[in-house]
Image 1 (cartoon, rainbow, N blue to C red):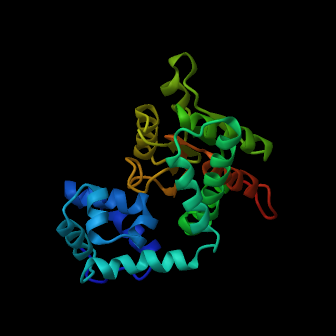
Image 2: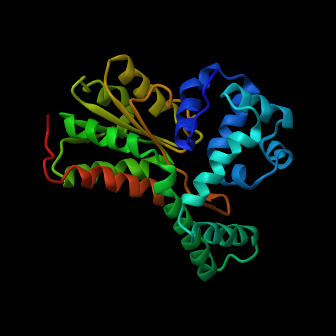
Length: 278
């Protein structure tokens, strides 16, 4: 698939996203685990990683070979290199968060506050190193050039979509929230034009409503900025810009802190100097 292996983790992630549709079922399964659990990849052995990913160890080797590496350890070194570049407090915070998450009995309000605070701090610590900053700049330029910015997200993603719609209007940009009130999702989306941009916010299990609107926009030549939880989410390969954000998870509850942080950066970035429409 790739004669020249990626030299950085960011390049590898981009290669995986670009080639996701060509991967077999098992290799795609490895890709999902690899992108969603980068720290486990850095620390784990082939046997442990394969077990957690639900594949045979030889599948990890085949995956590495498919992207131009001589073996799994060569590809794994990219994940180790990334960890060395992260904030020193990251690993300590992650261990604390994992310890809290394992204590299912300790669920009094004060303990829960400590657990969520620690886990969210860890997620925010890794945000700047895990997010593709080139994609962030691309998304910002798309929004800056847009005549009107449409925003859509359902269920858990609706919280981020609602805030982003508010923040964009606060930044004095023309913004419209596709909320589907009264079953009018398609009618609301039909007013989008090629000079506009759609921000689609979609987290696992990836609402079909958002996917439908986004794919229709793509078919009509409308740029789509995707905020999601994985570079292998259903819309990732088709989006104009993709911002894959990893959130904290405590007691099975996924936070939204990192996604809201990205939303704030996008909206407030439009109020800076030399920013304006067109």
